[in-house]
Image: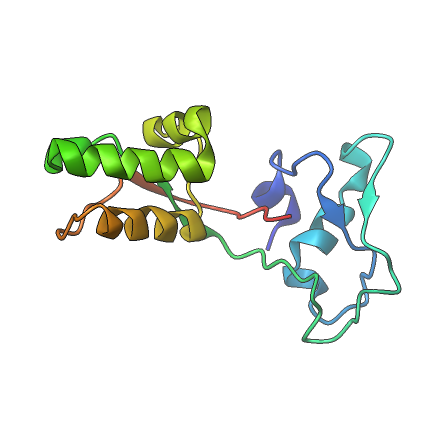
Amino acid sequence: MNKNTKLSPNIPAGYPLCLHADCPKAKTCLRQLAFSRCDEMGTYLNLINPTLCTKEETCPHYAGSQPVRFAKGFTNFQKRMYPQQYAKFMTLLICHFGRNQYFRRRRGDILLPPDEQKIIHKDLKKSGVEIQLEFDQYVEAIHWNP
């Protein structure tokens, strides 16, 4: 992986970093790859306690650098649902994400990681939707999970 092209400029502010370059998973761990570019991240860094990183295959702080498939927007769902289904679906998601965050996700302003896609599909089923609905768009990107 070329560190400069894959990570730039998307390292989130305050992202937890790992300073163990000698870890066997360092070449594929976002926390270590981001640490290798810490000069771009400002004066203060958010480091994971070095004594809590195991340097083993089972490190609980490991964050893989493989891109994942994000969904972007679901404005087309409403057209394929009955009004009462959509009302219930929208209510369930507003309860989960909040009103503004629901609409930002619906419009595609916020990318939906796989775990949020599952929540949305689960709430479609709770709303009585039996057909498989696809999101407006899909994109491959690095998942900077905290």
